[in-house]
Image (cartoon, rainbow, N blue to C red; front, top):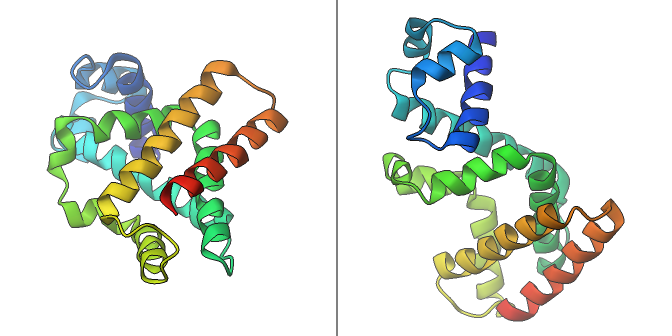
Length: 186
């Protein structure tokens, strides 16, 4: 397991720095301190490694959000909890979050079945459906609502990273931008 973790951590660092196509598996193996054969024993292809890394990061992010978002009684507070937890995780895990963005806009995303992509985000989708059913959210297609929300998260994350604000200012910006997002989707 330790070798697998080392390969994944090294692959993350190199994919974020050099991109998927600019990172040969030989470089990943060398920097991870494993033989090429070991890498290919763990991951049959580079595509498998990329997909496994995405799954690993998404699982860790989803666990963090579930543990840190709380189950509030109101839809607005529940969504705010998800929003805050996602952005705090992104700020604490910059390379991981960058990789998710990189993966989602790459051809590698097609290697995962759409239902598999959505599985980890099912609680969030359920929350959106609840909001639509209760007439709290605009009756928009779920994928459209998700696009609006994830675009906001990605954009605010980049803004916060670029400006390196103190934690208190980050929190204010995150809270304020959630209010803007809420107004947009309600």
